[in-house]
Length: 125
Image 1: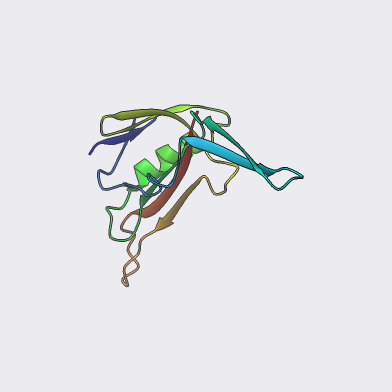
Image 2: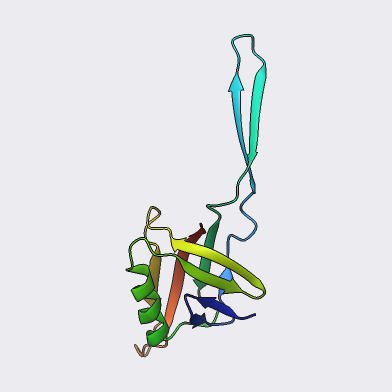
């Protein structure tokens, strides 16, 4: 499955880890003085969290890809197009939930750098 963020191709094995942890319905409940519940529901069209991870057991990201994603993350207030397979989303980085982007070097016992384990926190707009 091809994944691109702002035109940058991510490794195919990058995982969308919170894909099924969101609901397009918002609900609030208020108790009345008489003890009854008043329930408010509304559809939600924006703000879906999308967390992408290249973690242990998944293909690592190379230095060039990490640098390119860091450059996107550093653009305050910018929207980007995320394409995952056949789905397209307009997203921003979740800077309110730091770190919005993290890259930790993967090193074997020899100390050689073999890429990065990456977490990218986005949300739809």
